[in-house]
Image 1 (cartoon, rainbow, N blue to C red):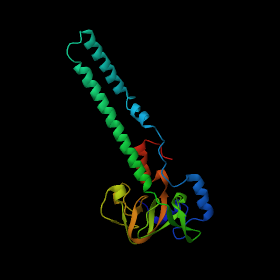
Image 2: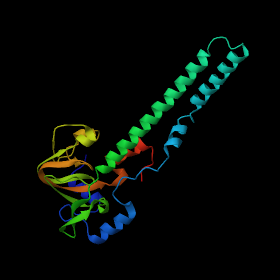
Image 3: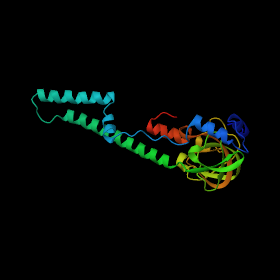
Image 4: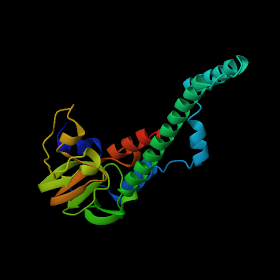
Length: 232
């Protein structure tokens, strides 16, 4: 929501030349690698048992035992319908929770697959092909048609640039980009002056100053919500 030059000044970078190699190394140490943190490996049996750790589930299981005990003490007439019904609800809830967690992990894997191996950045005033995990806040990314975007960044120069953001916003059509600031409360899908990790430049070219890397990106925020992991 502020002019591109002001963004570059706040990030301590030159919007025409990019960072120096020394500054990039220092920031790499400060911010860490530009990558999504993989989830902690949890065995499937533990994920299934975790579905029974909720207080409400424990109460339902206790209700199942009480209902079964009453049926037993009253002479075991007929089937313990209430106990079976409550137990069925608990098991259905556990299976549903487990399936949702599995789908969340698959979504996380898909998000990690969106990260790109390399990116072109300006270092010491020279375009350099760098590993995307080494891209840091303040880097000047150089974007061409067909490039996958390595980090969230504020555009400082565009020439008919369009990007596909379907992986992030679900928007099927390419988005035309601009360097003009937008309103502070503009939704992600309408921030025409920004580009995002995991999206692709489909037309034109541009230059953008990196504003967020790794788990601080919009894709990183989504990954954090899916995994329930803290942002780094």
